[in-house]
Image (cartoon, rainbow, N blue to C red; front, top):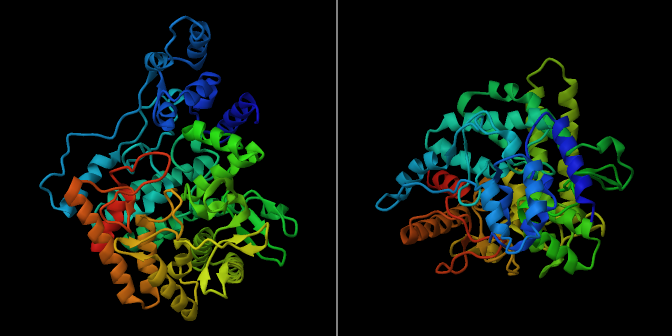
Length: 515
């Protein structure tokens, strides 16, 4: 394993270089590893969200002096030297409220004010200048791709003010960091999440007018540069960071993370898996982190053997949904450049979007079976894993009508369940597998089907999902992070933590679907 001290120095240097001063829990080595390996807290995320009450040096000195003392209590030491993270709770009660009223009022409970009062040297939270919505539950910070689906509901609720604030926060992160991290925590600085910023900006432009696109042009360009970083250094059939050359002039993208250590928020889980895998542990750590960047953490989609996470190979995969998102970003930049006098950038991005669309069709379309899948650039073969990511070319209007006809048939026959669309066809115990359904994928499936005229099937997806949301709400007064769409009387399971309530993107999609 890479020496944790070296990794920490690199991370600190990285933070300084990007003009964000913040605390990272890895600076607490060896206390950090001891706490995260001890199991004293049921959730690995708890400790890394704690805030030191004094300097790192003082805490480590105290730990060194006390840890070998008879009767030393590690949990008590942490409680003495750290502030616990704020819990998501309030006096708000949903009882007696109609679901729409509940969700509209819940925005204020999920809203966090600007973090400019935080002493950044003692918090892993990266300060943001404007209010924002958190998902809820254990998720106490903003999350990148969650936020787009949350914004859909904010639009229905007339909360354009919060949409604007969140777009400004993401712009701030891009300007400060060069990209949007997974969430506004220092331990997320190695990775991003599915690039939905262009969809957020276009959503705001629908509300406020096309000049919004010009306003956020610099940030859209910077995000594109982040995802394409290393493109100029690619060899034929090579990889560099998040870009993959496919040997025939086509370039597509993959998920990646710049660090090769365990995720701080899941330290013990990652260490255990890497040791059990029998593989190079740094490679396993990086593939786990890359899957976290995908947002699908975790799914058989990323495993060489669907039932075995130890075979995780995220970085080998060219994901169909990621490349559809980047196609949309290229098209957004193209639309912006068409408003400018200089035609050169428009011509460049017209060609870039054309090439990406062709590459998606060439590498991610399974012509034999009539469905879109990820492409393994190492094996040079299509993944055998069928997932709801295959709906993305319909959501972004990349598929031909003939292709959409085939995809829709498979969606109806294989993915549609009594509660909506299941995420994959595999039941592995991973949370991004069957029988679970997730709000963002319901929305993309619903809209993708509508794009190609499958109105009846789209309405069935919508009705099944809304009915399940409503049934669960009537039962427990909550909206959940994910749902079991196959057995409506069983809660969703899987994952590294219990099912969470709140929940930002579920609320947003429900309101947008209900209209």
